[in-house]
Image 1 (cartoon, helix red, strand yellow):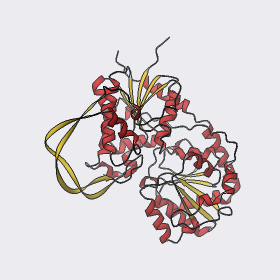
Image 2 (tube, helix red, strand yellow):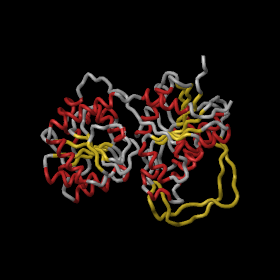
Image 3 (spheres, one colour):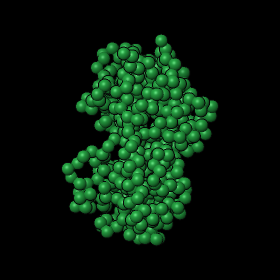
Image 4 (cartoon, one colour):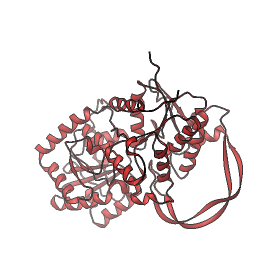
Length: 458
């Protein structure tokens, strides 16, 4: 019997600590991949109760090896003021923007200190996996992974998104093992072309990771095109897109639709928004981070156009992000508050409840590598209007699609789905059949086949 390939997977989120699509995708991949390879997953933070069959999960917040000590360099500092990119959004995907700030630059002599194991656990236990010290967490993760890997046998290094790329690069240099990087989102998606600034550390970490990789697995052909356009000299012949999938819906004894109809106030009065009686109004759902990448300006423009045709519509904005205050202020300025509900971040159970209540799902993203929430909408037989600038639109064929900037077409599509029941039911049913065929098992099999292309060390 042939011995299973040993894969060391590096991730940044794992249940129950999920804040975005990155964690959901990594979990789905790991769960399915464990049946086909000998899989070890290292993440900053894990909980023992989330055990996967055939998968060894190591969370740095639970390290007990007394001999793991990390030497770190410190520098003397001087104060400098200039315009640089800084991260203002402390979400799973930090969004740098141009600001004039005062910062400290390292110079002259260096000293060494030791980071003890209890400090490591504290670093990844307090707060969340992101925050203002995200770069410290990323660098420390790389050092600790290298330390742990000295005691592990593995054939392939499998790193997910920029947060783990430094660790993957370091392992490849130490061991000579092939490096596979999985791209769930790019800095150019989050920031736009400005991400290519010399001051943007995330972009250059991504660039280094893809340059060093033996294989690159983006989540869509759209993302492959973005890599080739925005990361010059990355070889196209080592990029192999593999689409995400989704877990089946959990069985529930309570019908979420009934729950929300009984408690409509749970969808009311967020921020300045007035209380709205939602039972008699049609509802359009925007689900995701409220950031540049997700197209809030096109969402607002579309809403303005649609509401001129029909005032009996409510836009439910489920999520949070650095553009949330801007969007709320614009809604207020335009006197559209009675047509908007801002729910803030919702957990998965509340998302499923909400998807049983709304009429149409709307995703006007400027640059969406995939878009898992569109699959969730399809599972609930919610018809969708999607941006063509998205990966999920490659596999959902029974949705209405337009360029992210085409608010007129978006508004017309939403109006049609809200008012013509025949079209709505036809597209919703067809999308449900499409998404039911998407499984993490199929995604895992494609990834295993790609591992077979690697030249493994004897």
